[in-house]
Length: 270
Image (cartoon, rainbow, N blue to C red; front, side, top):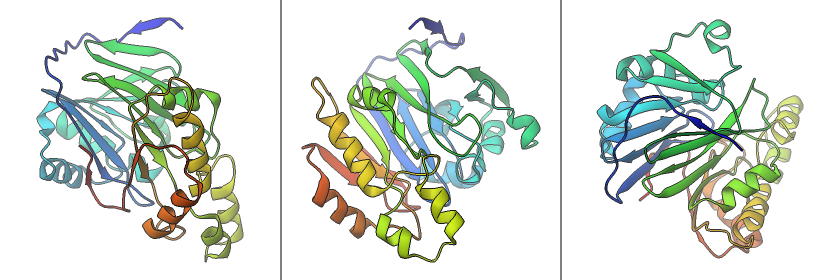
């Protein structure tokens, strides 16, 4: 795979302190923040710009350090506040090159930076690539990246997993992994049939057991460096932390550390 130069912004990193947090995850709003020295990124923002900044500051982040916003897809719980936040912070939004959100959703970013899945983009010690996810949103992607010597992958909003996802997860130190629903709760729950089918489809979301099976395979591969997993994007209707805990304890073989991100609550991860 050929490398590709990122933009001309110069980043100097000279210590080992990486801070990261889930500003919130679940059915309503999702956002992640990562910071190293005076450089930070935010991935997705389903909150208002004001609420995202307040959550970040409360967790000890300096939003003046944010240099880029990265967008996975255009569903409201990931996209809702990213436009205003980009203008408020005066930073570019990184998007799939074919995602015409400005026309489709009548949005206006401060600036836009287009990327191609599968290519690495590098500037200083910040290195990332996007990969395709299987979701019912145009050009849905997620991210694998290195910051301050730690490697992260976010796998969420995908109804199916791929060999590429398994490979990237196994090469990561930290994984954020969707566990959206418990299959029994979804089947017996109040959603109409079409919505149940959409969620369980290969363009929907990962169930608890699917997430754990993915973790077993990625985390127990030969040479895997994965040490910690955050289960995220729990459904408000079809999952609970207690149910997810039971599903994890029943199926998990990987011996690493895991954390459940409660719906809507900010989580300081380190």
